Amino acid sequence: MTTIATTQQPATLRASFSFYLPATSGPLIAGCAEVADAVVLHGPNGPKVIEAMRRDGFSGTALFDAARYERDARPLDPSAWFDSQHAAGADRLLTPGRWVPWDPSGDALRDAIRIERAPAAGSGDATMLLAIDSRWITKGIYMTIAALRDVPEPAALVLSHRDDPLGSSDAVNNLLGLTRSVSKLTFLRSDHGAVGALAFGAGHASVGLRPMYRHFVPPNVVAGGIPNDRTPRVFVWDLMDWFSAGTIAGWGASRARIVCAHNCCRGESLARFLDARLIDAADLHNRTVLAFLADQILDTPAEDRRRLFGRLCSDAVERYGAMGKLSMVTQPKRQLLQWAQFV
Image 1: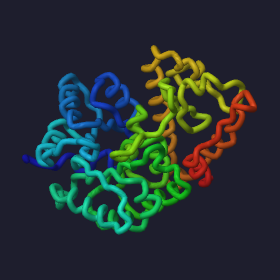
Image 2: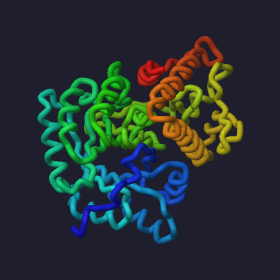
Image 3: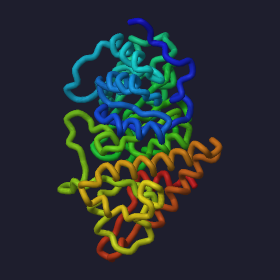
Image 4: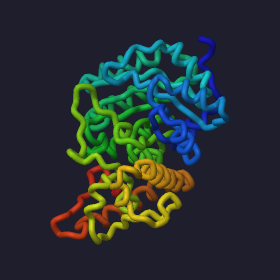
């Protein structure tokens, strides 16, 4: 290995936001880099993709998640992984990643930290990456805080659950305890809840545009979702959550606006994304609106970010209910209700 040092002060260790993306589409990566502080590419091919893009003039900030925590992932030599990230101009280096199953004794987390830190310990630069069962937040928060607080290097976490890692009734409060207690935390492969963590002091938040990158499903667990609905998932600002285009198209009059006033949509209805030919336009809408949300939070003084995010969520909760028909009632998810407490 030649070096594991990148920049002295990585941009993504300051309060910042990125999109988490597959390493497959150069135009998508470039488009997301224009509206976010950075992009995070999934998989071991990410550095090669960015290297090629840089030869063509790409200058965006990038991080790389090798995702070695995934089921059936092949081992990856940490030294070679560090070198490939460095060659691609990574803002900072991430370790290959390790899955941490729930263990009430706390040993699994402590062992994972020891093993994942080993190749980069003492560098003061590499970020330890762990994918953790959401129960480390909901049931084992004190063990999690104690274990991570002793790590001198930055840490990046991927929260894992079959559906919503922050859906449990105490998940958000515990997550905020973690961000207050452990500095320089990064949350990768998340939904818009990562922006909430950013509002409460996390160092970096990375939101996935595609459903599979908005949380990680534990190995040997079947993912949740909407059965028999393959229409695009669309972020609805007035409701501060994601809904399928098929669901949106079935709504009638409601307190929530289902139009988007940003330049990506110019006042058109979000129901138009029911058309499968508009998948790229749906991606454009999602990244435009989420970048706007993150920018609002980051452009607000740090001491006021919590209340701003809480107010946005509280206002959204008030718009739920009947969606044009008394039989069609949409309820806010538990994650949103938890964020709405912090007005």
